[in-house]
Length: 134
Image 1 (cartoon, one colour):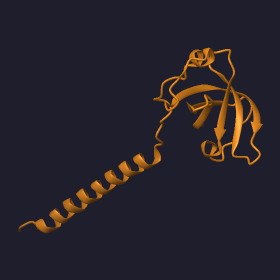
Image 2 (cartoon, one colour):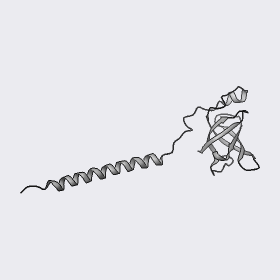
Image 3 (cartoon, helix red, strand yellow):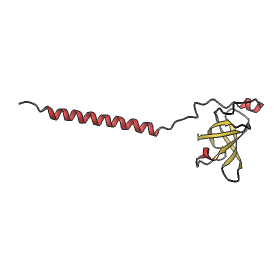
Image 4 (tube, one colour):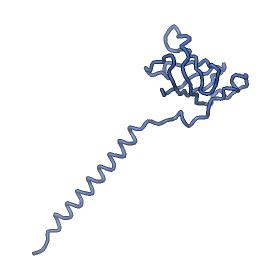
């Protein structure tokens, strides 16, 4: 009696289809759920050069790790706040302007450990583009 090869090929095709579907869906979930970490690849903010008054590139982004010492000021319209950051490994305190877009409904509190993506504006003010909580 001859074997039925139609059933065998259908089974192999279904198995290959299911395996490919699982592999593709797993890859899609992996790519969609991982968040891109753009801050960790940036150069450290040159604190000493900034405090000495040396010019820095105003259009380059830097990473600044530190602790929020205090929230100093809020703008009248609530779009901007000025915080005092104590960078890790430094005794200095830096004023950083956080714009509403960078906060994205995350609250800033005293003694909070954060990593900021900062740049200098044309007036030499440290402006935060985005941040993550540590």
